[in-house]
Image 1 (cartoon, rainbow, N blue to C red):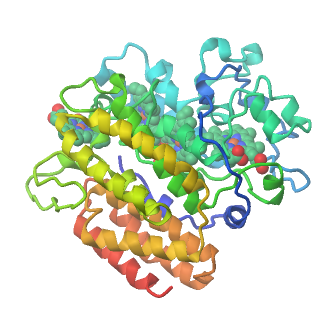
Image 2: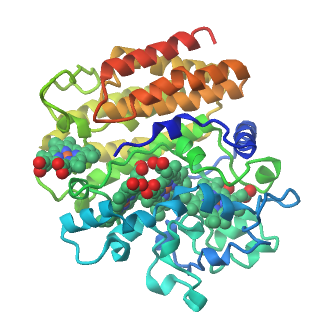
Image 3: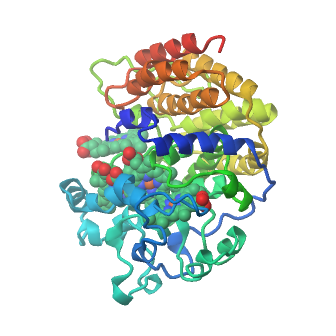
Length: 467
Ligand code: HEC
Ligand code: HEC
Ligand code: HEC
Ligand code: HEC
């Protein structure tokens, strides 16, 4: 599917609120770093033990349904308004199940139920807990709300009353609230729908039936959602984490690699033939026109020649960029793992499972290092320099690699602005010029041209030089 990168490219403050949110986010990111254990990700809300009370239990005008942000309380209280007016999770997620595309997908799959009644679709296109975990009185809970508050924040059965009467963040979490502020937990939550997990996923069969391709990057997608929260002083004093955007990006890449390895190991997602699940591969390795035949480029990190199906390694490539600075020894090991994985996965399953397990072990050790990472001007400069250099050597010649690199640069350049390495005018010019062009070059997988993308990377490099 053609995703609007216009939308993604312009993180431009559409409203003062958005601008404020962004600025606060970055200010907040400078403070705090508590150490944290990565033992277990909390249960994803859909599978949790608590009843979901329904959006109608959150939207009261003195609760989260205020018509304007309130400055006298910790939280804005107009979250419901933002969610209904600007957030795709309310505006489209459920509603698309009623449209012709969805009906066609379901028909192609031979599903008996209509998409809006089929758990296969509802599991991601709405908050869809089992029937006994829904507040049925007064129709409080309904899947037609789409991805409602509790689809991310957890079934409110136990925290509903206390969280409104002075209970701490820590206490709320004990009572079933999902820690959306924790970058690892947040990324796993988003990916449970934006990539899939062991209970629900979009495999190549679903894509073949017409489901759009998935792509995700947690820092940028959090901004695009858009923010209905303000990571300000009181946010942090309440014991919440407000990771800097570049840090969130890096942690998000590590978690994505971990989840992709889990997908590779999941027997239910590898049922279609000789190869591991095809959605783990670079779609364009198979799906592009053969008449022009100008797409293939050598890439040193794969060790593969032309005419071979490649994995989609875009998250690996980004993670390696972060680790190059944080933990160069592991970056080197991961490069070797990736090459091994490419080789194995190009020959059917090979020993890809063993390698996948090895990689998951490494992710465990690097997550705490990324969490403790201090993002300063030097980090931003090194990161952008390295990513742009690799882009020009052709490392990101595959569509997904270019797409992730472009999204990363958007986040990093905003970091430049935040750390005052760019003034308003310079940042604005980049937003409207080179960044928009770069994002446009990765807008459409069907017309993607690696040479054009390279030019766009080069133009950005020219502008950032010496900044
Ligand atoms: C693992 C989660 C998951 C499952 C299962 C899933 N979807 Fe999706 N679907 C998504 C996500 C996430 C998107 C948005 C993709 C994007 O824009 O990045 C999406 C997008 C779509 C779109 C395009 C939306 C638009 O705005 O035009 C359609 C149509 C769709 N899904 C239909 C279905 C149908 C029908 C089913 C069931 C047969 C289904 N989906 C199952 C997660 C899922
Ligand atoms: C797609 C996931 C998602 C959905 C849906 C969602 N939220 Fe959030 N919400 C988040 C994330 C991420 C944060 C930021 C991390 C945090 O503060 O915990 C957040 C933060 C918040 C905060 C915290 C503000 C603070 O200062 O502590 C409130 C309140 C909130 N959301 C209310 C709602 C309400 C009400 C709804 C439904 C109308 C809703 N959210 C829907 C993901 C979501
Ligand atoms: C319960 C499943 C679910 C969860 C959890 C979820 N999403 Fe989504 N999200 C969707 C679906 C489905 C869509 C597609 C809506 C549509 O048709 O446009 C979507 C769309 C989006 C979009 C719009 C994408 C576009 O193409 O414009 C953004 C941004 C987004 N999600 C961010 C997030 C973030 C950030 C999180 C985690 C905090 C998250 N989502 C968690 C299901 C989910
Ligand atoms: C190993 C090669 C390979 C990879 C990798 C691959 N596909 Fe496919 N795909 C195929 C084949 C073969 C078909 C069946 C073509 C047909 O029936 O005409 C197909 C069919 C499809 C179709 C249906 C096309 C139609 O004409 O209706 C879609 C959509 C699709 N794939 C999307 C994707 C996406 C998205 C990805 C990446 C996440 C992907 N594919 C990765 C080989 C691949």
